[in-house]
Length: 258
Image (cartoon, rainbow, N blue to C red; front, side, top):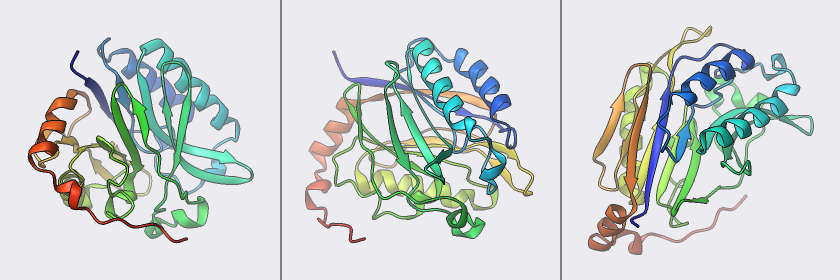
């Protein structure tokens, strides 16, 4: 059988610093996703919005969110991805959780904390890339501001899908569109971006533009409204593109120095 991955991107407003209400919101939205979806993607900090006051979020939120994601993944029979305010060892992290239907969890901590908003003063940055094998696809999930740094996302791991979850504001949405397309082209991979819509108490407006690009930079789907976008990614199309245009064979090799 041909390897395919059906994904659902949930684009919605977020309720500020209210994990319980946001989990209630996303429970309803996940319940409305098609039954044959393999992967459900939620925005960055989907239980709180992009808060710089993580101390307002109860430490118990970490455990509750993990348990909720495991329950929803098992119920929907889909993997679920999204980032949350995560408290661990007296530190806060903007942590992406990749939860599979069997309740197993993989994590990625945001590497590039958004200094313009002071994220670096509140959250501890990560230093490890995550590449997860799921249903025949190698998936590399990253978070928002990471999108601006192509070296960190360079396809030295032979991933098939580069995926970003975000709270990317409307005034800079042209950069979001352009960089997602560029990351797809330069890495010869599918590139998926999931953003929120609505407003937050900081006076920021979000216009969505959740979208998917193929390895040639063709936009496969995009939206500016509250909705769930569903799309099937086909492995053979990616393989054929890479075979006919073997640009990755000429990529530079390098190591990160801390």
